[in-house]
Image (cartoon, rainbow, N blue to C red):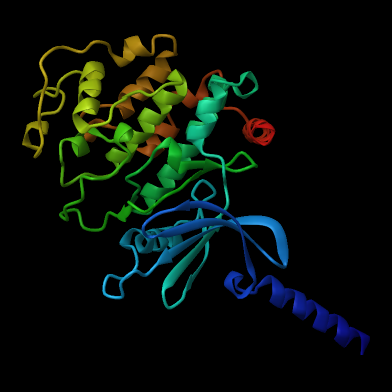
Amino acid sequence: MENNDKQKEKDKEKEKKNKPLFNRKVRKVELLGQGSYGNVYKVDFEDKPNVFYALKKLFLRNPLEGFDVSALKEITILKELNHENIEKILDTFYSINSLYILKEYIDVQLMKLLFKSVQIPELRLSEGDKKAIMQQILTGLAEIHRNGVLHRDLAPSNILINKQGILKISDFGLSRFIASPGRPLSKGVVTINYRSPEILFGAKYYSFPADIWSAGVILAELLLENTLFPGKTDVDILVKIFNLLGIPNDNNWPDAIQLPSFRVAKGTPITSIQKKFANFSDECRDLLEKMIVLNPNNRITAEEALNHPYFKIEPLPSKRERIEEIIKIYKEKEEIK
């Protein structure tokens, strides 16, 4: 009899552990953001308080329109990806008028960390720290590309860091599977400062090199601790790109002239990657030149970037524990504020 009671208790615990998240009482802790399609909340569960999640609630405004296409696309893609450097969807639930998406709750953006790191001495990032951050970004991006997914909005605001020092590539609302090479793609993608030249020129057909450009710009900004291509319009960004890399021509990008919005500006480069990053190693400049290059056909892959000598020379990428410590200090400073 006693054994039967123990077995019943074990079965109850197992059932509770495997219980779908949305069959449990959800408690809203804080509104994190809101938009025309829905709201995002910080939540926990009544039977497991203070373990937080991000809950996205999307509204069905018109039955004929359905839910936001980007959200449905995001769900489809994230269910295919399973990697520690990519955010996870934990559960989804449909009601008559709403779609709920439950994700990991991670409140530290790389963008915010970079901003604070130049203001607070204790958060100052060493080159080894920056290498470790970039290494994780490229690891996640390589996995995304291996699964045939183009992210299309890689930017510091869409890279999260949890308390264990693990980076997560997030926000797959603009992502898509590269299944049909001949199918045209939208040009209104990617946060403008990280938008590749081919997209700025209105290319209808582009692929993984567009993400590599964005990753290269992020690396440059980690090193410079400043925006690489500041500007508010496509033209602003193109001028900054031309000032660094020169004007597209028959030698460096012969296909550029065929793009819908192709335009050039007079003049020669004000600087170059070699000059702008003169204080960094030859290996560093070489990697940047292989990622931030006008012609998308000449950009290296995420896998090739991961194996570049830059990550194998001193200073070596910092250990995970160091990034974890940085996040701990960041959180402490935020609480004091």
